[in-house]
Image (cartoon, rainbow, N blue to C red; front, top):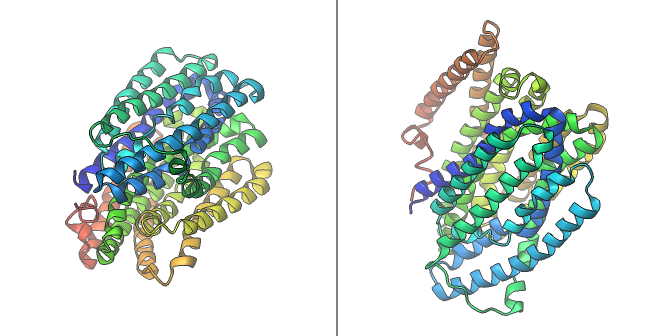
Length: 478
């Protein structure tokens, strides 16, 4: 399957998997309020930490390892079998820790936490890393989309009050587990499970665990933020932060979808020594990602004050002040993602990833500890902005002599100017429009027209490949 189609499937799945909870979020917010949303967020994020530990860094390490040997069937079978054996052992240990937390440590969130147990169980059968390494993104997208639609239906039918939060948690965790099992069946005929020794299996543990350090560090400022806000500032404040971050996280799915597809492709090109082709991909993808993330960041800032009360209800008007600045993390995330997935990881220079994200995590924790006690959730927002900026800055420190950062920064400035023009125009229009859905749609349409028109002018002047292929087709062609 072509890289363009893989990107389309992966982007659709990732965004859809985030979009469905986003669709149910206004319903849940109105049913359980700030406290209920904060309580669920607290339990879910602890569960998510456990799942990260169970999967280690397999989304990156496993995908890269399978992509490197996919043309050698014998090596493919042994690599897959060894990694999966290691995965099962680690997941079993994590599952025990999760049950200890649920029954011996958890407090008011216990019923919700118990309903999320299938999230940890699903890690036993989560073989998406193997499918992605084989460029098989379609099964992941279609089967997971189907089961999550069923979960959404259950939410709308059965969740009515805070006491029903366990139903919400069980619906999504069960959908995750079922999706993993169904997707795993797609490996039949593509790989064969063979007997491997314990040594072969655990040979993958150290390099996988190294990448897990970077995954864990990123999670510190994506997940730990909400745990810290809930513990320090209270569940109501965490509810505001949860709903502000939810939309930003949904938009970041577009970025991770492109990176996930490009990682196995670039890993394969790197193995073949096609450095010039890799650089062409990187330049085009960087320009496309910065164009997309600037539109998202400035667009969110333009309409957050109207989107939050309309989408989540008046109880969550306060989420707007958090969402507007949080949107600018998308630009930093996109910039760092291209460098990581198309240069650092394919070359197996994992220590650069670890150092950059661990530094970002340290910055985040410091800012959180300093700011959350005094300004609540806004402290977490500022900490996240500082952390996400630190990651590409650290990458630049390691790679400034290898990559054309001056060109990348020029792209950033150009699209930021276009985004600022869109932001000013949309905000100005809002002065004369009421806070209603039709008015919000009009503002968003105006923003699209302004930004698209400016981008077309930019592409014509620079003769950008994006002028001919508006959806990154040139950047990610087969």
